[in-house]
Image (cartoon, rainbow, N blue to C red; front, top):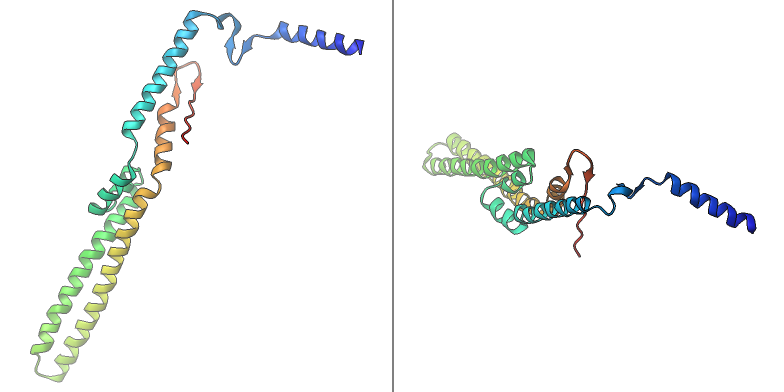
Length: 185
């Protein structure tokens, strides 16, 4: 028992001789005014960055609305450029392609009604049916990709906002790397 107390006292003495920093702050700067001022400035900078993030963060409702009008806009704002291109081309191309095929089917149907011989009647009827099927396929692809585009625009907003926040709050001042964690409940 006596040796345990002696060992503990010796251990504390040795550790205090080698103590140079507390939480990364040199002891001589622990109570200095300049250190407290610098810490206050860092906190203010991070608070300003957080306020800037609050204005820059993405709004899910706004992204859905913009993506409904301009397919791929929400993905573009979330820096998902390949997805934005795919949704833009699929949505617009599907609807435009569907329109052209259905328009062609309508023209072939008009020719079918005016045809006199059996071969041209069958030919125009087949072209009408093929155009109608292709038009519906293209139109379906366009509408489905448009709906998925609107859903996806708001699906990853929280993740994109967190990435933006980390990017803004991660700062390097030449001496140390500072992180500020923000939690919301």
